[in-house]
Image (cartoon, rainbow, N blue to C red; front, side):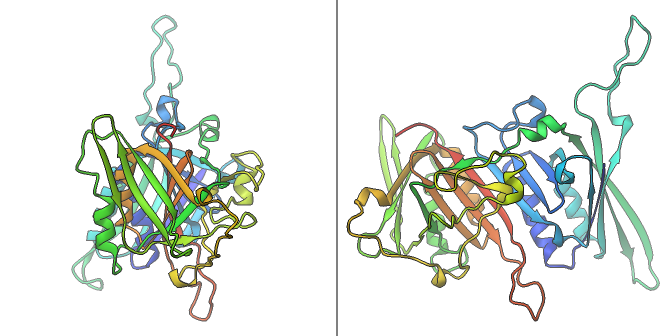
Length: 386
């Protein structure tokens, strides 16, 4: 297998790469990097792949996508489908390399996958007197190389830096177990959250972080419904129903709803992922967040398509609520402050999904077609039934 990436810190796309890696490192120590033909997928869960439990249904799962076109050079080759190369990485080590790179005079950063036989422990067989093969997953290195200019570029010296970040390669069977969660949208409410840097951003941040002060809190209910006075707006509440105390925190500001059509899901599955890690699903009953793709019909809040509900539809059809772990909601509060566009989806009594995206502009100055966004999706399964 071969892996070589080149990215320049002077480009705007470097910000997407840096933000994604640093966000994952801030939330979790370990992540799985899956390089494919089209994109880099970063998966982070509380449990690591080395333990044999890559993903667990009751754990908060962070899925990130970085399009391949942010790199000046993206060369990935392996014998697996989609040229997939999966590895487990300590994200903080990679972030430290990026920090060191940013302090130098800017130039391209080259990342290569290198074999490191000296890092793989070899056990000796006392009875046979021969060395056995290394046990466990093979350990390799992401070699990060860049050049630092000392003084002026024309008269100064150049110093080459090479840092190695240890990674643990995943076998094909381990990679096959990394499957994105299923989200049922038969009773799903989606809200376009106020931008963090907008008029209501600071107030909504206070609302999201309202429960962070309660360290002993285990579960909370995320409750969403449609505003009866305005069909294009929703209401969001955080409810605590513990044995000894109850709490109801409500958002009183504007909250735009995204009306989802059964024929065109706002959280869509890609054809590439549907043939890879997940079975084919009936689009009318369920969907999969595949390759972390979530497409919103319009990016401008004022252009999001909405429709008025029919008076024959019972009010409970526009209500979704689910219990999640309090520590998962704290992750949401950290993600909300880091991204420009955030969507909250509540699947009734099943799951809660927070989708964050970064706009990368258009392909060129004369084109109106937007580039593929970098995205982070945080999936939270219900912690207990209603």
